[in-house]
Image (tube, rainbow, N blue to C red; front, side, top):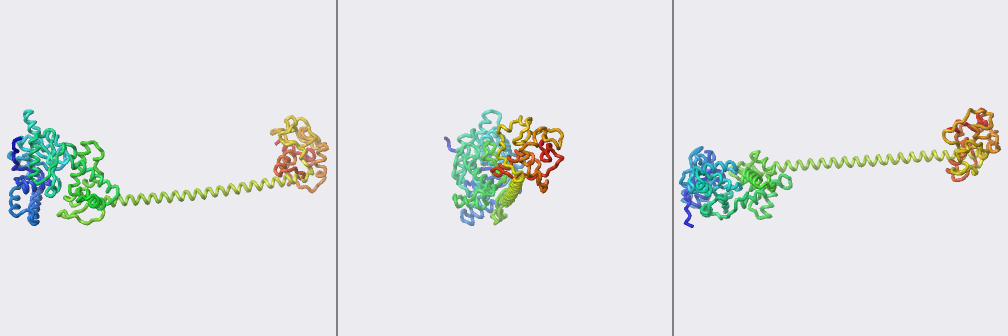
Length: 509
């Protein structure tokens, strides 16, 4: 390979942080002439003032001599416009390298390379300081020419020369060839990087190249940790500085790079790869919308004075808002827990009340049952009859045909439900349709003494029990567990069947 053509003149498009830094190392270390192009005259004025300030600082710290400063000042000039001739002056055709350092917006860079590709000779290297945008796309945009050979030559001089911020201090430069880049362009770019006193690394044309493919996801994750309220900006950065030996934390670094630049890089990585790990943090987008883009704006994750010095400030607004949200959430959870506890207590009280009501009802029913047993006992005492001879339910004497056959022993049996009887004849000894025979010796034996006893109170008599002695036995004997012989007293009524001993209507029920 023939010796490389030396680089003597450099044009830089963009007078921001990166453009000024590249101009500095080009003029001070590579000792080449530099023209800084920018459409904004105020940006150019600020850049030149900062350039002089940097040189004076280096002289004060004995990094360079006064003569070095004077020589470096003479090598740099500012030019209004983007270098394409559409606004301001055109880049001279004797320039060896043009380094683009405009905002990290794909359309802006593609448009500039298209204009420069058609303006400058194919011997002029067109370099981009992009940290994420495809160099191959930029080369394709610059591939202007009437013939295919001219287009190929124009595209072959495009390359990525990625400096790091702050350029005067950072010792690295990435070289990124496009698919179309010639080997001569690669070698000349590497030689220029070394002339600027930088270590040179080479990356293929992949989104983010080496550095930002790793760095930007880390910064984005740090922002998400802040956004979630996991830790403050100070604690995140301290962890990286002291725990991982980083010179500065990711959030302070983002402020230095510029949050707008970080957001643009994240968008390019996300769009180019489609990988969700590159999706920009919501907080990053909102801070850029607010104009809090870092040191250059005086506010980012930290606040800065006019010289870029960091101010001591309270926790960031985002963290305060997140803490307030978590406090409100905790308060709401506590209220819900209290409500649940109150409902549990109310439920327990209702259960206790229901149990108490149930116990009182059981006690009432038990008392009524005891009263019924007492009445049944009085039935046996008043009648003087022992019902042990009456068959229990299920015996043959309980067959349904008994309703049609008057029985003398026992005289009182339970009719089937729904049985009706003819009108009552008080003097008839066969009452209730022949169901009872009042003349039987059993009836006489059962009530002989009671019939002549006028002191018996009618209000103590349960008619249903009086006339249904089988039911008396079933109820009373089962309740007390043994035969009873104390039937209830009877109040005789000569107008009723069997002299008032039987009420056929009640029997029918």
